[in-house]
Length: 382
Image 1 (cartoon, rainbow, N blue to C red):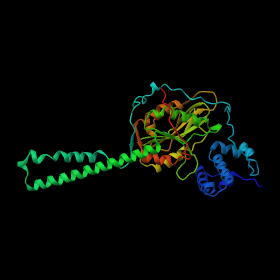
Image 2 (image 1 turned 90 degrees about the horizontal axis):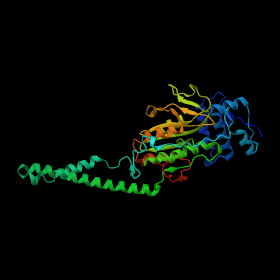
Image 3 (image 1 turned 135 degrees about the horizontal axis):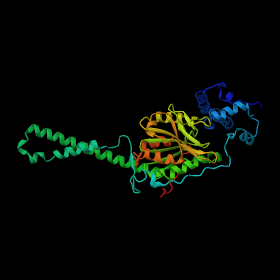
Image 4 (image 1 turned 60 degrees about the horizontal axis):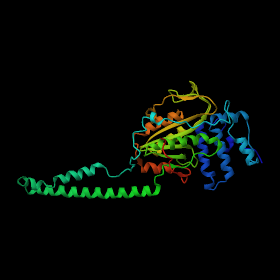
């Protein structure tokens, strides 16, 4: 059987830009996916081609090798050849450990009590304006009795009209309030008290995803309104393009977990990722694309992207102190250590610590590739 070329698989030139590669892949993936009638082997090859050519480091290594994996190879051999190459300086046997964080050092930790009640918000739910109008009308009710001498026939007519309006407003308020209670009960019946949806990667090279999942569930669930999602697809995609997402109120954090060399990471003024003060070329990220996609999907939600970075071998890894509010409205993803992630993301989400927006929640949940993998939140760290 003839050999294939990753560029030929995607139908792009060898000098294709990342945007052209992504566009070609997404177009072909819709047709090649087994659920759409494609073959599993074709779809797997397409995905391997994209994963290689979309990562700057893997693409450079592939171009240097000039390899063309054969379709006739066994699955085991193909997996070996197409596996992620070891990068210079990495220790394949090194596994970073989850940090233990002193919760008393977190400024947001004690903002809410253990018994705080979750508020299930939704656009169009009853607000205070209708209640205030009805209450104001009720204040007018005894006026004819208190000031009978001041009421002529026309004033009595005006007063009666106001009373009818107040009664209608009160009836509307009651009806909407009861409808809101019914929908909240239905929502809680459907989802219960679950706060985690989906599951992090289970492969050996996805260990850092599981570490981040543990951080989210152990610490960020201290905020009663937090909902955590693992393995999200971009809109119109069928893959787990985003490792994690954390939602609280109308603030959404998209997260990628990375295993990179020790050093000091930051963002340059132009948004370029740096390591030790120089442009970082040791790994890529698709998170900017995800940030842009989710901002279009949820235009009224503040969307933020962060990279939680773990060392790929023994050594110190640090990052600049972030200013998360400055990143809202951009497609930049800021690198954070696990400790910074818990501290600063928790503080940013604590603006609405007890709010679950039902509409936003359902929209994000629809993007989870395997939303049937729902788990309960573990007990918060003490």
